[in-house]
Structures are given as C-alpha cells and as structure tokens.
Image: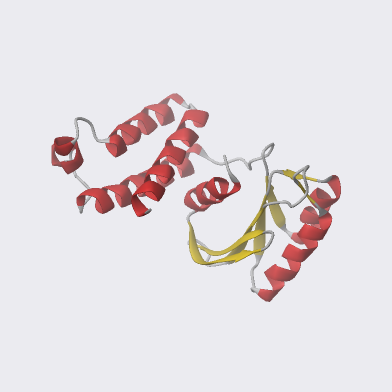
Length: 183
C-alpha cells in the first residue's frame, strides 16, 4: 500500500475530515479534523529522498514545528521506514508512526463503519441515492452485478467471521473505487 493509500485508509477508519492538503518538496501534509473530539491532526506523508527510504529524526522535528505552526494537537507520520532515533523522537512529540512494518491496531467495528460510509458515498455518487433494499440498486440493473454492493456483502461476511485482513482489503477496494470515480 502506498503512503497516500495508507493516509486515506487511516482517515476513513478514524473518521477524519480533511481540511486542506499541502504538497511540499519532501511529501504532502494533510490537516484533518477529528469528527468526534474536533481536534486538528496533521498527517504528514513523507517520500524520503535517500535510497534507503528511511525517515529520520530531523523529519520528525520538522513535523513538530509544522504541528505548532498549523495549530495541530497531534500528528501521524507516514513513511516507508523509520530510524530508531525518529521513532524515539515521535514518542516524545505525540506523533504516531505508520510504516510498511507497522500499522496501529484498529477495531474491526471502525473498519466496518468506514466501509458503510464508503458504500453510502459510492452509491450516492454512482446512482444518486443509497438503495434501501437490493432491488433498488440501479447499478445492478445496468451491470450484471454491482461491484459496490458485492464488496459490501463480502465485508459483512468477513466481519462476521472475524477476518480482519480481508475486511481491511474490502475498505481499500472501496477507497480505490471512490478514487477512480472522482478521477
């Protein structure tokens, strides 16, 4: 999963609303608002310039300054890999890490709620309304099988079985569909 996909996934699961996006030479900053507690969160997506792909302590210090400048209470730093010094600095600065090796634990209920929101948004975008029952699905009439509805049904089955990895994949597929529709 790319750093952009990880950011979108996290925003969907945590129910963050993006206020604005700013690109800079080393990556992208997203300032989001937590819908529950109305706190500002800085999500920084880093594309390291070095070949090894490590995010260093200097990157964390730079993010801490950006958090103060943008008046954010907490932050999430998303990159490929982190040095030990960067990881230690993040603990001190109230910055959460997401990397290729680490994704913070997420409750399956939150993933299912994010899937439900994504399905509603996709149905409204594609068909104009969210169907109340299967026969109301307009995409099912046009196509043989509605992809959004199929993923939604699969997600419910995966949730009931406790298959978190497949549930995460269902949400990822819906986010990719949403991105493709908007493009």
